[in-house]
Length: 161
Length: 161
DNA sequence: TATTGTTATACTCTATAACTATA
DNA sequence: TATAGTTATAGAGTATAACAATA
Image (tube, rainbow over all chains, first blue to last red; front, side, top):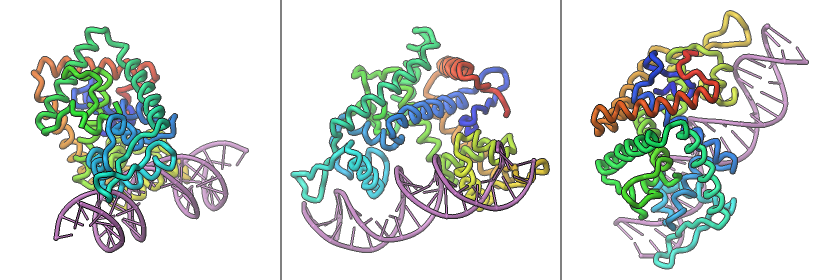
């Protein structure tokens, strides 16, 4: 499993990976694909996640920390660097004078949109080797795993916030 | 796609994710699962990858840099920290007096073995929601994507080195 | 008193450039 | 000259603890 990144790690020598190994390798492949794609725009994975969650939200710093599962002090630095690049802005909250909401700038939005399109093309190309019926089957199976996992952990996969 | 980490991001509002979104979310879920599991052993993802590739190899520092796709100077620090913890050792090469091979210590091996077992249990539990036939189907589809991708990029998925 | 956000600090991880020792 | 590895340096990213301002 942890051998995945090296391009090795078959626990099965009969030209077929175990389900666990396969999933692990697949996840490394997808992360690496995303990482390379967004690096073209000088974005790290975490910066991309930041822009991604801001596509349909204007959370406070605090809410952002929960969304990204980071300490609030980490979010300060993350937003600082993104703001310095003109990708996001802090807007003082009108409700609570201690608080800010964070929003994408137009530059931030177009950057994340471009990066997302490139990534989606990468993944689509990866899946293109499967016949349509198989692609649908894969999609359905993955959805089922995700939906069940989300339900078991009390998360609404489809929430917009 | 990049919204995955926040637990949102349905591009489809009919209780079903697109294939690309599903794959992206699945990869984030698996990485987060691995990250949490190895954190129990005070390992980062990259430290885990280091131990993982050493499970069946004793590469030089240079080879390690290629395996992990890192600069050689990054590998120096990575191995320094692992060696300081007693997880790996540098052994001077007998072939080339400039060179070292890096090996797991018994402590490193048992640590990565434990972490791998935990992770595999996590993923297995995640997949347990699927009937056996579906699990097999998922496994076959994923294998096909990975094997094709590897072949297209000139990588032997099953190589031990 | 509790919460929001920042600052100070420390550590991991990463790369580039310059260096040493060996090939 | 070229290669293996380290060091110096700089910066992103992360967390903990202490703090200021506001609730």
